[in-house]
Length: 306
Image 1 (cartoon, rainbow, N blue to C red):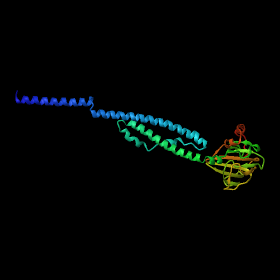
Image 2: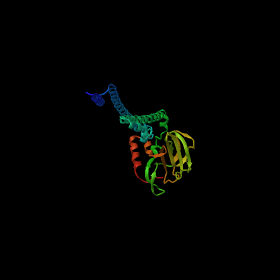
Image 3: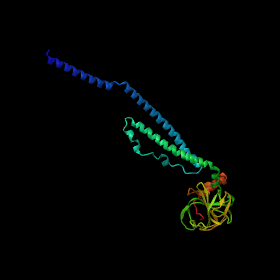
């Protein structure tokens, strides 16, 4: 064999060996795992399992928190007669959508993104609930003072008055059209005592004070904790502005002053600046049967006395 043929044969063998080696390496990388790669895959699989377990725990925590939020709004805040925490406040987000963009560039980022979003939502809701419970705790500490201040009796002795018109749309006897009657009318003889329905401070007292046109002789008591009561069309007022009064203390007498069609007391209850039906605050002064009777009378759509 000539030298040239030998060189060719050697070159061919070398080239064939290189090709076989490259193919072997590719096949090995494709179908065979290196120890380090196997270890990394096991580690990734373990992380995925831990993320799923963490996700399950977060969901269970969400269930418990949702129950606590429901009790907060429906039970605890009902007891203290305060506005529930809005769903928008509880569910407000943390940061923006760019906060989670980094997960979209990861191979297994979707699971991480979902878990992170759940944890962020849970963190925000826990913070809001913590502040809410702090507020409820403060209310509980002042429970006795709050209960003494809350309107809880009829402003006129139940055996000396009668419900003549309740809260809602009523026909006005003087103006001659239907409008919201924001209180309750209790008819009674002129001079019948009128009592403060809860502890508080007199904010308005006198005849035709500014902002109370048509009410005649009027008194307004600020009870704190968001409660305010108004007593109108009185014959006379026994208190002065700034005076502290106790529940059951006389503040005036029944009359027919202002835009009134007869001797009665017009009584209003406001909670956090909003009018509410006063009849719901008579329960502490009436038997169940008497309360049902008052409710029936107050619901009748008729003509108010003022």
